[in-house]
Image (cartoon, rainbow, N blue to C red):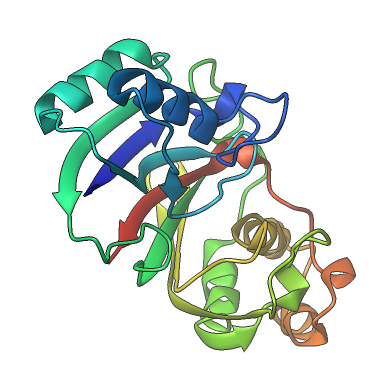
Length: 243
């Protein structure tokens, strides 16, 4: 039995997230269907993370086991010829049987793109959150530092999250000013909508609707109702999975 690792890029706009859901179009469902067509076998396709509806990926990772002897280059070409153009397999590798896309991961890196200027973009409207109000980036960075380390992130946890506990470790949180503003969050794992809830609350700080002291209180309250809005899904990208 071979264990095959895929690195995948996708535009999540037209999909109901990564995970297969009955009657809905998902990334996992699209890829699994085409793997079965090529290998003539039903496979269990395991993803590193369950991105929500509308969230994109630059390097999602998945793996599956198969008895097929197909050449890896042929598999990659075959998948890319069958998949819709908004899903691309960037790399295919054969890995050890112990590799598991989700459980072997040490951390995941998400990028959130904010288009912070006075006018919107015709081209970036599906890939960045347009905010015409000036943002106080130093204030956002100061609040972001509070989140570094292992903490209870209940204040940034979606109500439907089914995780057994809400303790997560944020390894890195950076706010960079480029052509757009970019928030990078690396953590050992994420709660459902955690990254987007953090971004939404930090944007309230940037708009000076929330002070540093209020942000600290929100974080320590462990109550999602105290935090800001969940940032729109279309600005979020899973950029890297680290093993």
